[in-house]
Image (cartoon, rainbow, N blue to C red; front, side):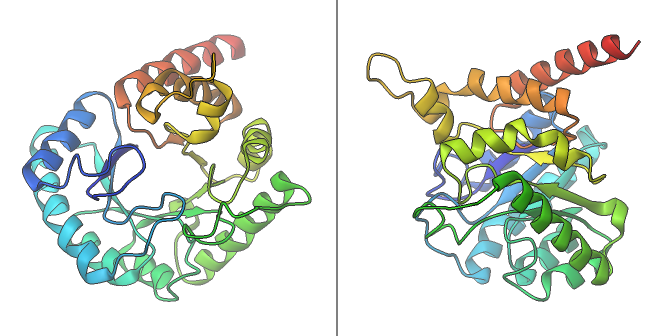
Length: 272
């Protein structure tokens, strides 16, 4: 899943893809590099970020989704679009414009209409775990057992989505790395991925360029910038493949696609 943030303030690439033609070209380039899904978002969810109204999100994402959908249909027909939003008033027009998946970091809790809107359109849904909100999530996140609590939360949200009419084979779960977690929580969740995979729903992993890896990769007092964490992200992608993760949400598609393909080939060889 290639990340296409059409926002001015995302933590790693804010402001780079706010012009529609540039955003569409970047989405097509990610498809060429091996993305199966292009995830278009109009609201930053970085720690401390402010909320963006549905009208403004639509102004940002709908023109991009419309044009990208046409380009992909002509050049990469197997690649689909997801919309990264917590609001049904953004998801519905995005689905009508050509998106096929709703990527909801609130797992349908923020907007009661989100899950029913997705069901009505027959869309896929990504349900993510987050403690708090983007504005508050890194203010002393606390768990007794982070893996068990995230697994239980996602099981409950899967049930809510199914009750709302979303087909069970259209539901993807995401442990929400970095969303209301400390570095240790993130590492425990990565180590515990097999427990989440064992629940049966496809798992999405989003570690791309995230701060907790920068804290690990600090040498001589220098913390790497987000764009310098491509190799660190690839390490989590390879480990995720080994754990059975199905989908990886990344900024750097080509490098992570290669890491995933090599890891998958090794897994196949180990089983034979």
